[in-house]
Length: 326
Image (cartoon, rainbow, N blue to C red; front, side):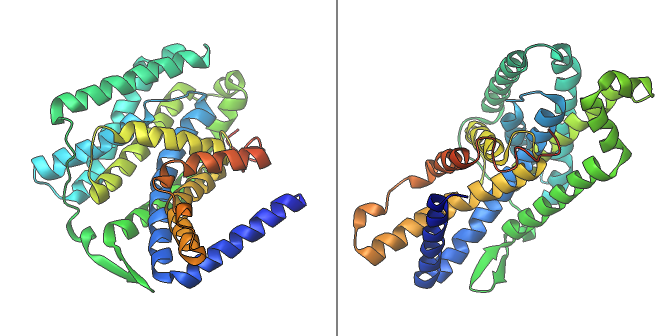
């Protein structure tokens, strides 16, 4: 680490401490919001990383799967009157089944071809899903009830909506479950072996097509689950797919393409930075009396600033050299 980067990290740390000292309650609220938002990004990115890192498919439709999970939950809860708990199970399974159909009948035909073919196919598929949702549910924002998950939960200096706490817990469980699946099971071992040497793996009796399909189901279902949780907290609209797929690709680049740990670290970093940056700028503007420092709309550009800074320091991302899915 060069002296320049040490100075930058030291100044950033002092800035964070200043924000905590001046606005502790707001800092805590925004930090929690950022972690929850980051956990949604982590869940989507994990599914995309599994598909990209192990199968080599750039699935641009992953954001549409995320959005579809939210709209299926809306149909289950708001239109059919079932509980959010039913939606948390049924919607991800429905999205996972769609992912299986896409992998089996569309993407499997493109394995071994140029990556741009899969990208173009999934991009077109994403547009089809988005327009189908607009046709069925319209373009207006909608929402559905999260039952008891709307109750506030006291946390030290602030209160947090129950859905945010629940989202964080589900995200942590998802990360642990995916890690154990890939690292600690025969399924994960055979998948990683199949990536390294598919011919030899099939010679010893492993059915790689079936396992890759199941992996696609898991990745798609994770995106659908994230959509259910995000929709329950903030509502839904057809623009959520394009917004989140861009952010998730930023997360993957920041963390390191194909890296499991990179997806987790990148998602949490981007999420917290998006929510803390406006608060930190506001604190600095209040402290120094320089009003123009409090930039409006800075949250939208923060992910790309973080990506540029990370790539300047580590061109392959935070865990690009060590990602075990590579």
